[in-house]
Image 1 (cartoon, one colour):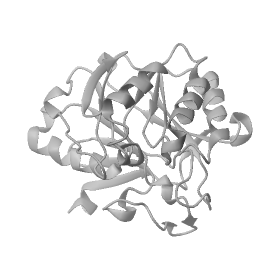
Image 2 (cartoon, helix red, strand yellow):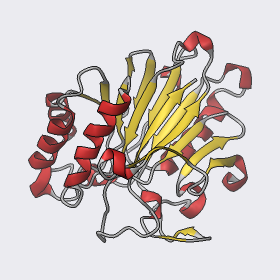
Image 3 (tube, helix red, strand yellow):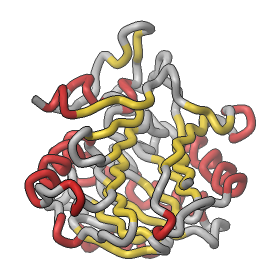
Image 4 (tube, helix red, strand yellow):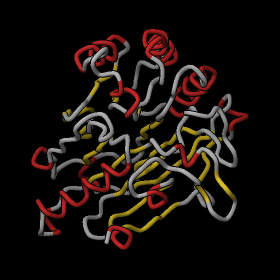
Length: 278
């Protein structure tokens, strides 16, 4: 059963904070250290991950992303989807994200879709999303892979309003594979695919999945955690760092930047995530 296949390594209560909201303009910075083989040549480098902006109720948080990127100087900046809930904010949200990161020139920028991004796909097709992200310097990956600065990134579509199509045969055995999967349920299903395609554990590629979507529950109850996560596995992947015991795949689920449905957070602060490679 999937509930026994995964181990949560870091939860909300024992996460490591690299910076407080006071020093970054409103967002907490959560840091995860990831050991990688020396031949990957990633030691000392950093990846900034943030998700779920939901522009329209979190404009001020984008200034925090700017401050965090300037402070930590990441090699990669990854956005995990859900730019805005509202079609009327489509252009404004892109302008805001582009302006927030316009001065960050030394980082590769990568994005993948979220469920809200795909909700109005008839109005905003993939080609338009790709073009708009390209205008602000992002590689937009939707069921695509791209080798960027020493990491093979694979962006997956969202299951709610799209069709995730992981490509395990495109994974690299010589580099870290970073799978951007907005919904952690898709990342969990990806682990099953890895297990099937690579039955020999010595032949399995090293993979890290970056996910959002759950908002960490957005409203958490002390001692219980998230009330809602909007995933088919409910609380299993509500927040934190997870390890798939069989394949060694690691997944990080962030609480995100903005809010959705209800503009309220309780015992669940907005955040950005840093992955520090060792």
